[in-house]
Length: 140
Image 1 (cartoon, rainbow, N blue to C red):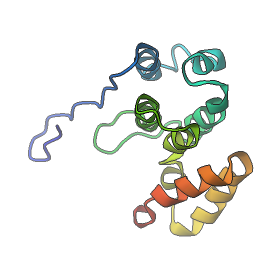
Image 2: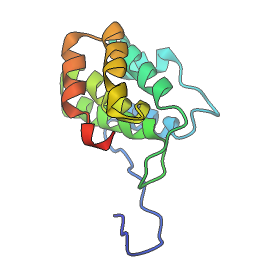
Image 3: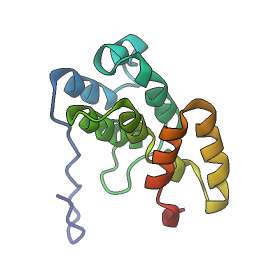
């Protein structure tokens, strides 16, 4: 657990669950060295989640979590993997992949409509609605 009173680095959030999901989570930490293929994603998550995986991966590329300093996409993917483990429907899993995208790509709240419109061009209204509900507007 992260303790702001120390200079110790926080413990990274390690996903635990089904073997395929764990392997995918571990591979994400070094995907620049060994990119993950669409087939690998489809084998673990199904083909219909590839667009959410790739969209979040592209939009969060180069961004890091403030507390853990891990790649931002790894966090979003691990949230999605937890949703898979818990048996949530694909709409929820896609929303989990995308849950931080709006916050992380917008510099201000004025940028939010454009980011949501970009999501709307690719994803269903249900996914867009879920992402807009979990977006922290006050962080923008």
